[in-house]
Image (cartoon, helix red, strand yellow):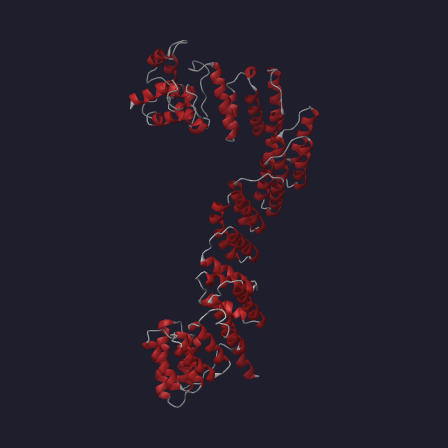
Length: 611
């Protein structure tokens, strides 16, 4: 391992391998070796920040004196230099570096350093900049103590002024600035220097102090730069002086300073932090209109805040912005999630907008979310839109069934005009050359059945040949329901014969309707045989069939003992498949005990009886 590390060091010093490749060998050996030759090699091959911090982090700070005493003499050849370097050598100054350039709190020695004075100054300057970047002003001040004020350069000067302003206040920063300028005539306060002082006002949200400092700059002939105006925007926004913050954009343009997207970020981020979503949204609109387009990550962060605050316009704006940047990737990831959230919150406008966008970008939406969109439309009284959604699902081979279909059917049956408009929707599909789905036509017939409108139900059935459709079990069930609801019992029998002639199989719903038909015609024994036929066919009787037969037996007074036993058996069988209503249990109990039954679900009846 030692030989490999030394070979990597020699190659790195001569530029034979890239600094990044040197990191691999260095990271595998620096914990066990810890000698200066590795770090020296990395420092002399123009390394990146990562390879530099890794290399110098491998040195042993405790061996600083030994490393200094064994440092190569000036003018020595590379071979001689390698001969003098031993595993015991280290550089304490380099050991103060941490991974990724984060500064250490330890002080490098001023004397006996293996680096030249210029290298020490450059390193201190970089560490001070890193400390400012990591928001560690106290470390900046500690590092500055190792610099001779008369040799301070502009970068170190700006760093220490900003650190002083953040730790001790603006007045102390001005005193420090005057002190350093007096000791070094080469130091001239610039707009960058004052930008660091403005950060102290920004941290406190002191709009008055920031404004006064800006005027002071202008009086001294120093024109504020972009950093100054960015700090000013944040300061005004934190102070909730939004009018002044927005005025900064106009004022800086007058001064010849053009705002960037980061200037807009300052305003938007502060508004979002204060949960003022509307102001953030308006500034986002202005930002995009000025062609300062946020990047994808910024859009995602803003989207997250708008989602938390429930601002639908902001969410849609961010989504549209992301679509414009990367429509395929972002749409497939975000639109289904946003649609699911909007459906859960029942935000109709947002649901429709997101779904429309999904259609524009051909984003596949799962059936569950599409049914959620349909239910949201029904709740918002957009019945025809919901019907179109159900039609689209049926066209894609995913028809809506069970409870969602029942809800849509009941919604259509509220008004005859809705049924007619739904039918016209299917006619337009037919005229445009699209195949009309059978499930959509069945929904119209079922809605007509709930209205008890025999004419609309059978008129729709008459159009099957035009739509190139053949009726199925659901179609006949809907027509049978219409006949039973309108008490056209003979027509119901005719339909059952037609269904048998067409070879359409009966399901549990069909047998339930047959049972109701026979009960209405006082054919109780036939109704009981239909129940047994349903069971022998391997079908589970519907809940309505159980209730119909139990009521039939309870109301039949001719064969009390037989009916009592049959009612109890039906109640027991019903409990195997469904939750038995308390009212039905009480009714059978009263019948068995030969007591009068009072419908406790409807106390208004008792009230009127007492009156």
